[in-house]
Length: 417
Image 1: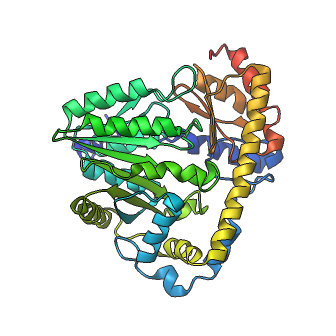
Image 2 (image 1 turned 90 degrees about the vertical axis):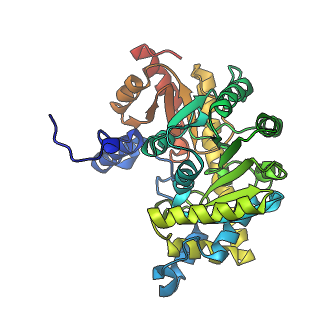
């Protein structure tokens, strides 16, 4: 028997991450053989056409301009006021919804999800998200004594599965005081899918109706991690307007992160932003979540907040930021379009992709396919029902021919789509 001194709720926990595991193997092989000999489609960070990790120029300049105080000072627990206002503005843009809007600094978008699960669901509750989702959602729920429940994201013809969503929400509302829902749209990880305007309208109308006249609450988390690479700046944000004028018992929380839009992945900087018609709920939001920040990581990264806030104070720098984001959005779209074109040509099926960092190839036997691909120096991420390809990090040169290689490997091992 293995000796353990962990508390009962902690026994047996481990964190073997398939994404980082595959990435580590790809990086080690690249160092041995040369980067040109390896295709690394695992990591959710933007790489340029030469395989270099991208840090936006405007962000690099802002980092170099920081004063020592801005780098090392303790920040307020809630976050610097100028950072919080900048986060709200960068998130919503021209589509700021009506209502009381408040923000708290968090450790990346992950910090938002942790706080919502911790403060708005009860021990033993279920938390709802789509069947295609970032794997850490489940770990966050399990580590907080909750269970992750899944609805089917897509219908067979590639549209939002409203019936599955409604059935799961209705069942949870009947059983729980609070129902926490995490919706990763636009640019869903791992599919690249995003809800249409009409789908957003139907989702929000249903949420209002399902708790109408009941002593029950919906906490709807809009995870927009890939927002800045999901479309034209103003167009891709229009759905935020729909978050205004919700009833008191439907709280909207937006999970905003600087990881992608400001290419500050490792700085772990984000913000949780609430939208509510009720001032008391907004005030409570700040009080309980900054308390949990203090009890979890204390205060947030001062330098990262100042970099972001300093950029956003200068219209010229914001224009530079927007231009750089647009450049890389178009690059990622070109890579995705090339992969989908070649996949269509060779008969490889993929889930409906609209925008974002990833494309998913649905199949049974994904692990076996990935293991075989690694023998050809191709590293992808095996999921429960498919394989994830990070088009954000694979050059067009390496994308060319990749779909055919995946298809031939899939056929060779007898995997089914």
